[in-house]
Length: 241
Image 1 (cartoon, rainbow, N blue to C red):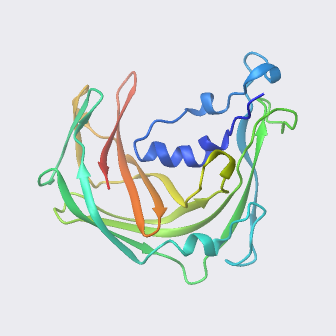
Image 2 (cartoon, rainbow, N blue to C red):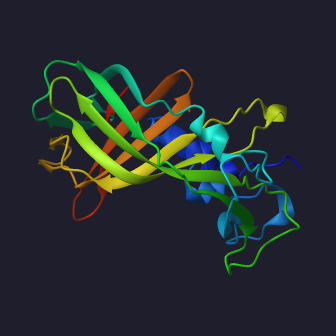
């Protein structure tokens, strides 16, 4: 039976989706192939415990440490943000955006004495019981908290976020999957000011999703906006860098 790495939904897939890449949804990623799952019961990866590590240098059971995360987070990073105003039937306008791109400055605030946590993720059945006899692999994560600020030269985007989780999972060389520290955070942001033009005409929701992947020395990222109507929610990755 072929193993399914459900943890792609918990970690790496969340990062990919936040950057506008396609990835499985919760139901798909939580599925199990073969006859190990009965119809209607799909084990999924759930967080079962969180343990604070003694220091940033403490190596967690997944082989990562807080120092591994902090090593790839600079004080600041400059790049070019590209506005993407339409995709897959969705169209928006961004107030204050000048042209299709703008210089972007990211600033990171790391606490003087950062706390680092180890997250233990396990496969569980629909009742919440940990499952040990199915072919599902759930990655564990080390995480810490930082502050993130972003501002574009055109002034269309400017925000400051505190208490943002950065996660880091293990590598899987057998599948060619090399993990990188990432951020996947949905927060209420007044900037950028985005209006949906299609398929609905209304302001974007306050909640926006920031995705970052730290690929030292580069940092790739995106911002996703949503428009919730009476019957569905529309989504657009409005900015990439």
